[in-house]
Length: 388
Image 1 (cartoon, rainbow, N blue to C red):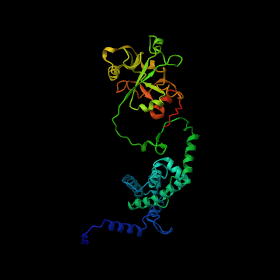
Image 2: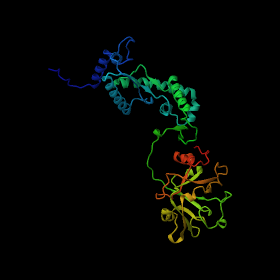
Image 3: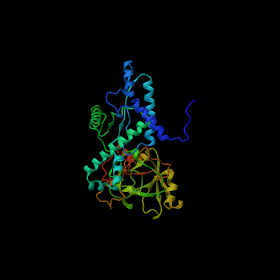
Image 4: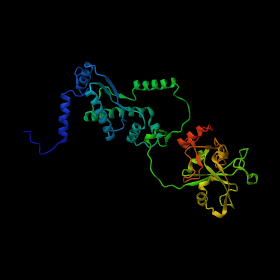
């Protein structure tokens, strides 16, 4: 007959009983036992070697040491541990080395919160070296806590041989790997726009971004096509003809008007159909034709407050006819030292002529990765000075 179950269940007591059993059995390396002790972990490897078992080296992907273990860490570790136990049961000599990611914003932000720092300047005033030392201390403290938490989950890894990304040996291997890639011609130099945190003034990886849906107002922006001398064309100087010989205004639709300051090109669909629309009177503040995706003419003109009787489609052209045309930056007068006072029309795969916009996309490479890629693909000018 089994012993009678206790009237009161104490999970902490049960957990401690299990831990004591693991300790008595030397289940884990690195748990307050003499070096000569043959831990069960080492015993499993030795038995596999005696049977000529295949060796398996597993390098654990490192979690951040920015706080205590969370459910995602636990889930990942348990799944890995189950797989490694299976390989041990198959006779393989498994070496599973855990590690921790000790670099990056998560650690720094945790330390900043302890000091209630809100901006990068506060860190500089406090002292960068002093701040880095505190980050190292924080990392080591959290690493010890997480070691114990993972062992409490019975994760069977080499807890006496943990690696950290801040260890010089680890950093050296990263540089060695990069050098090998470079020697094989797999590294090239180029420009790329990266996510930036305005608070801490540093790059942020895509995985750290958080998105939310917002309802915003969109605006239409006019980009006056330039004449052969790169200046705005006056109405009297505009001659009738094709899009390539008749300056007018490119109409772009944007939900981020603050990025217009960094505009460098207008993206179109080279295979799309665009209309040159003549507007009567001063309804839109320009005397030349407006260039809009043909399918979007009624909606765009209605949004601009132009009635059907006050405009007419003069001609339609392909987007490829617009590619290469130049225009004057709409803020050229306000920003006389703008690095690119004249932009050009270019093709981009992401442009839609049947979407919510005009079929012409205002593009500011300094504010978006896709715009930067499209700019480089067209071999246009680079080097926007807009960084914030």
